[in-house]
Length: 137
Image (cartoon, rainbow, N blue to C red; front, top):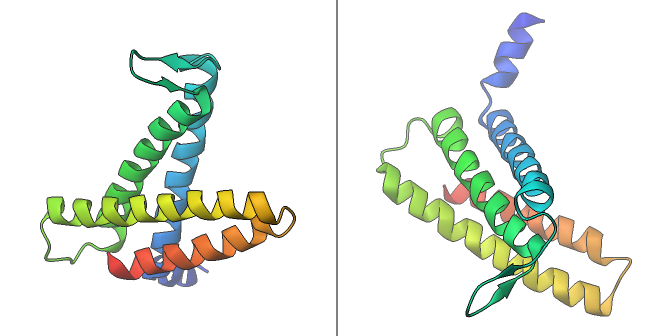
């Protein structure tokens, strides 16, 4: 059993999914804390723009999750990479921003046209984008 566990943990895919799951937990916890305890469910009023509490919480939690995911993925999955850390981080951030933008566009599209199928199609599409992200980094 121990040998099997060691073989499974040596697989890059398992370590990648562990990194992603850990970053997701960080993202969700930070969102909850920011929404309920930092912003107190109230909008943030700036002189030039008003951010809703969910949007501000999402920005903070997504940033924390992204940084967590990068460092875990860099140190657990892609240890042998020859790229400099700041180049890896730039690539990682660009892909993550692209995924976030496409996710936002698709969610708005599906929520406006199809309500029942939207969640499933968005999940399928985002899982495919995460696979692309896995092979690009």
